Image (cartoon, rainbow, N blue to C red):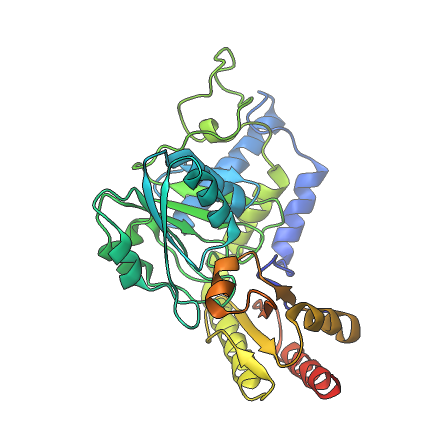
Length: 374
C-alpha cells in the first residue's frame, strides 16, 4: 500500500517510538497511583514527557502540560473549560469540527460566536479576524494549519492584531511536528496537540498546553492519586484535568516522538515541503485536476478529479491501485461551504517525510489511469 493519509493519522513511526511502546507494554505500572518502585519509575517517565513537550513547544510550565487521548479532547477542555455564557469568541471557516461543534454547544448556551471567512486556498484572513474582535472578546480560536488545504496562518501577526487581553487558542492537530511553534514567543494561550500525526506518537496520544492566563475547569471527574479524601477535584494542575489512569504507552510514544523530532526536525521539514511541492506541481499539470491547496509545510494537497466524486475516486485509488487517500469533507464543513465543494468534497493526499518520490510517481500514474478510464 502507498499510504497518503497522514493528516488523518500518521502511517509511519520511527523505530525508536515502536521500541519504546513495546517496552512500555511489556512492563509498566500505574503512574502516580502507588509508591512502589515501578510505579514511581513510570511517574518519572510521564513527567519527563511533560517537560519534553513543554520545552518543544515553548510552553509555560510542566504542570500546565496536560495529557489527553487526542487533539479533540484537548480542544474540548480548552473551549468548554474556559468559555462561559456571555463570553464572545471569534473563530474561522477553516476550523475542524473539533472546534466548531464545541463552539456550537457553547453558542446554544449563551456564548457569542463569530466566524471569519477564508481565502481561495483556505487562508485565514488575519485582518478579517481582527476586525471581528471587540475589546471584550474573550478568545480567538484558530487552526495553525488547515486540515483541508494545509494553509498556515501567520500566528504572530494575528496575535499582534488582536487586543492583548484576548486569549489565543490554537488547534495544532495538523501543524505540530511539521512547523516550529513557540507558545510564549507567539503569545498562544492554549495549544491543542495531536500526538499521532506529525508528532509520531501512537493513536491515543494528545496534549493541551496552556498559560497562566487561563484556568480550565475539568470536564472529567474521578481519581487522581492525590487528595483522595477530597470529594472535589484538586485545584492544582495537572491533576485537575487528568482523572483516571493515563495512557502510559501512548505518552511514552509521544516522548520518543519529541526526541526524534528534536534530532531530525530540519531534514523532516525540508523533505516534507519538497514532496508536497512535487505532488502539487505534478497535479497542476493534469488538466482533469482542480487544486485547492498551495505548496505548504504540513504535507496536504487537496483536489477535485473532473467528473468523479471524491469518495469514489478515493475508493478506486484504494481498491485498484493500493493508494490510500481521503475523500469527503474532512470534518471541516464550513471550509467546503466556502469552496462550494460541500456536495462532493475533495480528495486529500497527505504526505509524511517517510513517503518517497517513487510512491508519488505511482500515485500520479494511478490518477492518470483513473482519469483515462472513467
